[in-house]
Length: 78
Image (cartoon, rainbow, N blue to C red; front, side):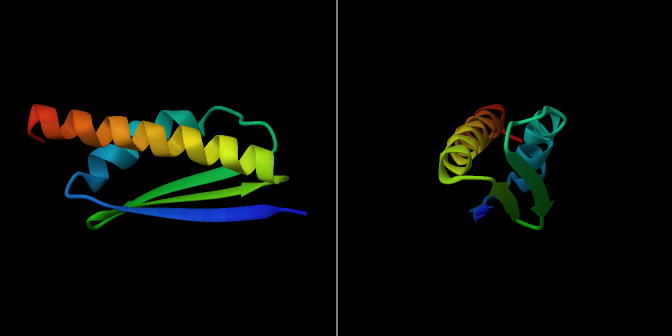
């Protein structure tokens, strides 16, 4: 049974965060399908996985990477 989740980040750095995550989308993540969209002041991360374990692992990684990208954008003043 497939598991699905969506996470929305509201940030003034949405384009920067989405672009920072885009290289990760080219990597194959076992048992998952992931999309990232930057739109307006939001970043939408959608994850579909074969099981809950894969879903949790992908969400943890993408949330952490989005947070790093957000904090970096704040520091450099973009």
